[in-house]
Picture 1 (cartoon, rainbow, N blue to C red):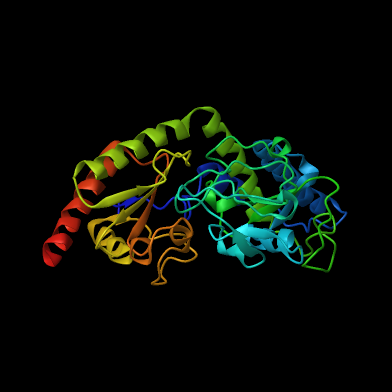
Picture 2 (tube, one colour; picture 1 turned 90 degrees about the horizontal axis):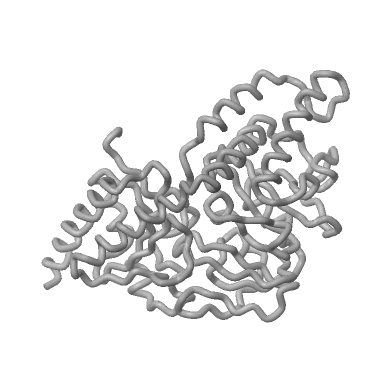
Length: 348
């Protein structure tokens, strides 16, 4: 497996060593964070340290961070019962609670008419297209942007944000809702009143500790220009794929995008077939969001952008991370082009 190249960072990221170390240390802390004795206070201190780490990395206040089981639960906590509008490019976790009526232009940008009743992602997981967030926005899915782009929640002007640890090198199964002070958040999980009464249940101490350490490390990487270097490798990949003269479309080209994301339509070659061919060649890619890949259907994100059913079914997503090299992406490009030529030859 050591020769494989992982190009699916938007689905999940490798666990950072800082997160692993924090989680291992947390395993030795046996107290319940709600207990008032020394053991309980030690566990509570770990949670509050992680809350401060996440808040600082996100440009928020610690009191605004509500730990959840992930961004999906955060979306339910933020959106349930609010009657929000959104566009079809949103993640399924947000779409489940919104009326998808907002139009999307061919570049993937969403027209917002009533920010206070709207959920709008900061960056799309499939195309990487970054949205300008209007002031007064009700909810923004920050999951893909957090850790890859400079994000200061206190300057965004939105009431609530959704984040997830495993998108920035933390563990799976932990995330947070970021809620501006004064915003009413009705608890969906009720019981002991943890997380300031807005998310009951004994806290996932190990996951929270890993989230905090990962967020701190991600902020450091961002400040040191790590993702600028990733963008350069992504651009090399994009240029390589277009240089073969094959029948492709680079979705979102020329738009403000996540530094690591590339969506490519290869006419005549189904996305899931591209994923299987890449896997056999030693590359992990996807045909869309990890929550919908594995289902043989066209990308609703691309359909919302105006691509037809065939084009939307022939797209792949390539998402890079700091460990991906120029050599890795050029190897992928050569293998992909070789397989694509075979497909085109069969239908010629």
